Image (cartoon, rainbow, N blue to C red):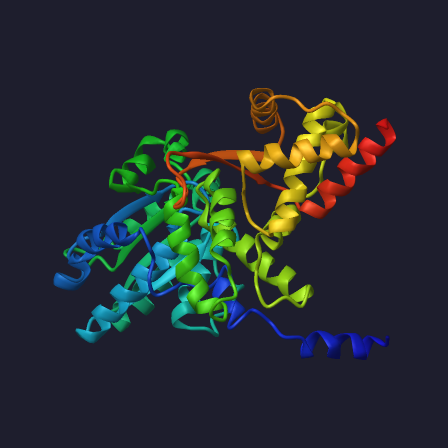
Length: 401
C-alpha cells in the first residue's frame, strides 16, 4: 500500500472521538468537578481586585502534587475574574506564565510586556529597564491591573527568587501609588520557601491553598465529565472508566487519567472499534508504563503463573475490567486440568493472588459490593495488556513443560 493510501485509509476510518482537543493538556474545561471550593476561596481572596482595584497587592500560593488541578483551577479562575472585572469597567488582565518555559526574571518580564504589546522586542533592554517600561509606560499609562500566575514556580523561585519581591515593590518610590500587580504562585509544595532569604521569604507570608490528590470516585466524575465533551455517546464503557480511575487513583492524578483515556480512544480507533473496552485502557497503561519484566514472570512459582493465565483468559473472554475471585478459581482449575496438574485449594489460590498483588505490578485487587450478590467480593484486575501477558505466560509454561 502506498503512503498516500495509508494516510487516506486512516482518515476514512470511523472514530470514537467527537472532539479530541478536549483532552489536550492546554484545554481548560468550563466546569472543574471537586474543585469548586478552591474556586470559591480564590474568589473570596481576590474580590478586592474588583471591590477596590489598586488598593492592595494580593498574593496566594497554591500547592499540590501533579495532576491535582492547580493549573486548570488558576486558568479558569483567572479567566472568570478578568471577565467580571472588565464588565465593571476595570482594566484587569490575567496573565498565566509557565516557569518551566519562562525560566528567568528577564523572560517573564518580556512575556508580561508582550501581553500588552505583542511586537515588543525580545532584546535590547536590561531587567531594570523592563521594570520601568512595565510600571510606568504600560500599567500606569493604561490604568491596567494584572493578576499574574507563575505556574510551576518552584525552579524559578530557587534560581531567580527576587522576581516577585521586586514586582511587589515596583512602585515603592511613588507615594500613594496604586498597587497594580497581584499574584498566584503555583508550586508542588512549600519547600521552596526554606531556601529563600528572609526578605524574599516574607513576600510569601500569604494565603496558601493546598490541593489534595483526587480519590477514585472523584477521578470517575472527572472522566465522565470530560467524556461528554470528547467522545460520541455510548463509546466509553463504564467498566473502562472505572478501570482508568483505578489506574490513576494510585497517584490521585487527573492528568494521568485523562491521558490514559485519550490513548485508550486511540487504541480503539486503531482497532476500528466503536467502543473503548477495558483492554484498550490496559494497552494505554502499557504505553505510559511500558514493558512486562519477563524475569519477574520467570521467578513466579508454577501455580502463580497458572493463576495469572487464568485471569488473562477470563478477562479476554468476558471483555470486562475485573474478574471476581470465584471465577478466577474456576478458570484456574480448568487450566490445571489442561496441563495435568493438581489444582490448589481456594485458600491457597487466594494466598497466591495476594502475593502477586503485593509483589508484582501485573495484578491489583480491590473489595467491592456487587449489585446481585450479598456481602463484599474481591475483584482482580490486570494492569498490563492481556494479549502480551498471555503470550509471555504461555511461552514460559511451554518452556517449563
